[in-house]
Image 1: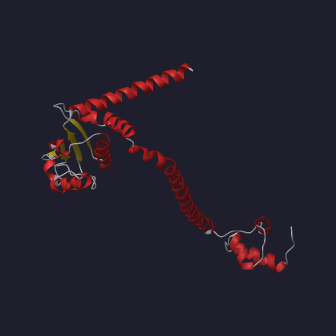
Image 2 (image 1 turned 180 degrees about the vertical axis):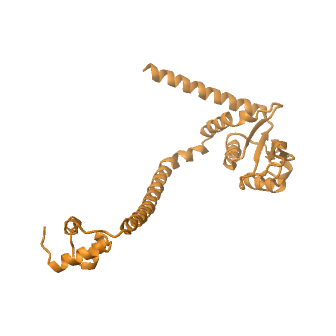
Length: 239
């Protein structure tokens, strides 16, 4: 260990007795002293009662700074990760314009969603509060079939305290469906006296398309996809 003058050592011990941290001592004596050396030089020095409180505050500050730094780093990594995914998936997403691929996507969408709104009566129905699902449905219908817009009907389903006129305007803007093709809104009677907690909740839009042939065609395709996947699994397990 390097030897320091009595004056320097005395000053170091004095500063330590005042509760100065090693970093603060190094800055004040203006010498590059290893912290391990400082530890040896201040042995036996009695620290003031408030030293522990001071160190706790410093640790908390450093922890908060560390968390902010980690958040920034993680945000950058997440952004880079998502950009990487976009590069991988962009050419795949472009294939949705292919009619056959679009038809499979539509069949899978209807398998998961339309069956919940099966109504019979020669119509095919799907409803969702997610505007993306509604838009995907309508655009896939346009790609896959010669859609007759006159066969489409839309119904806003909402809670009792919601403004039905505003909801209909919102869904008309999202879908491009004319006002004349909207049925009268359906209000859930169970919600009377119960305020809507989600401020951005715009109700459910149900799309009815009056074409039994289209529904049967999509159900057939969904069933065939399911059966093919089962066959593929069986072949994989068989080796």
